[in-house]
Length: 549
Image (cartoon, rainbow, N blue to C red; front, side, top):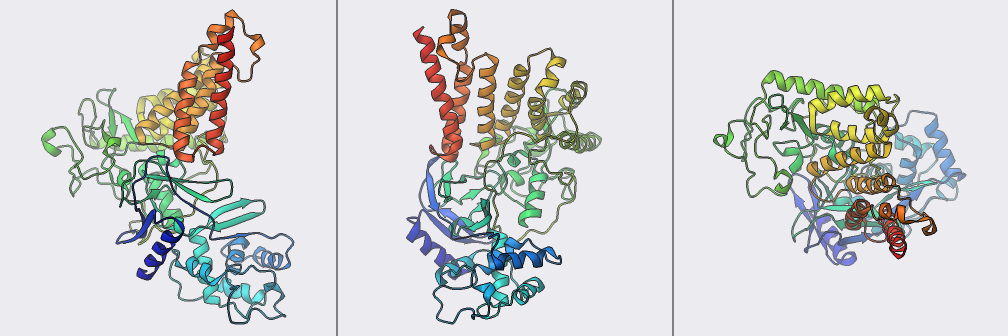
């Protein structure tokens, strides 16, 4: 490990101007730190794939492998094994390669010794020997010379724990070297995206100081608004660790705000562990912060100065289980009732399609595994935009059902993931909702999008793609609301419509806010940023034409 840290830093010096430095940490293993200051939106590094492998339909070797897997009895899809096999042979090896009789090896890719060495430096769980799957594949494909079963198993594990989606047709995976040592945080200071050449581009999401740990989110931009137990459970099941970032270890969960049952106005935040096997809400939290209801003699609560990113909690003056307005502390019965209602309405949101990933997840109250993994390395990330729009659920949300659920949700939740997703669902169901509220559908859309975005800004500090995409959509709805159609002909404008055309100031302001955020997250050349820029340019032309009348 110590040798690998030196190898990683030499790579950084050679390829990335030593902008990042790898350090060994006791809790996360090898993690990248900033080697200089960065401003929001600044590129930290750009890295091409170390190795990329694609499916090869029609190739005799690939088809033979796929045929074996389709018969059953294997743990992974064919592409995983195909990736390992295409990373085994060395193009600069002094030892003889596969023999002429090993026809299935003839079409496999080769890698250099240097690339394979870098590849094996990446995180993978220790293996004692080759799995039965690898043995069966090598035997079935008659691959012997140059194919050490243990090496193939090690390569397979590196692919499984570090790969990124690379192409869709044909399906391909890629591995990036230095990027694989980025830590996760639910309040990350960096963000990554692909450029037109499929390079991994890392940008500063916030101001980053020299020596600061660099972190990205292994979760989608949408998932960062989920309550802590949901985020932790996803990371535990997909990445094999329980997150301990500032948001996950904070005594307040800003994504779990309930309406105070006493004053009916203020917000009561639960502890992140509430409703899980690690629930600490019934006794004081030990450590440098005492967040029990009687902490600090009932005085205003404040985070210790050594805690980072306290801006997110600036509006919180009282501990968990306590109303931020009237200081009422939940009774045990009240807390249990709220947890039951939370579980119920999380289910309702998913039932009607309010889960943005469209997947049925385990119940939020499910028990979390107590053990934490030793290393956060090797996170797989998804390629492409994680849309902020909910997928359509199995049940249609009609007007009467919406009204009933809306009353119940507003009576229970204030700043909560359920309320946020409900606002998104209302936007998507605006045509059904509009008659109930005696409003135009576009007005319902504007109101619900604003409500959703306002909640998100209180849940997450800094730039977030989901907020930016929501602002983009809000701008579209504002234009529609004032009957200002994009692409309309200037010849159709008259004095009656002139005041209306001058009306989309709110849309213009919203687009500018979205553009500013996307510029930081993705840069000026990315399709997301350019999409909003085109709308701004189009508005400028339309309004200039109107002014000329």
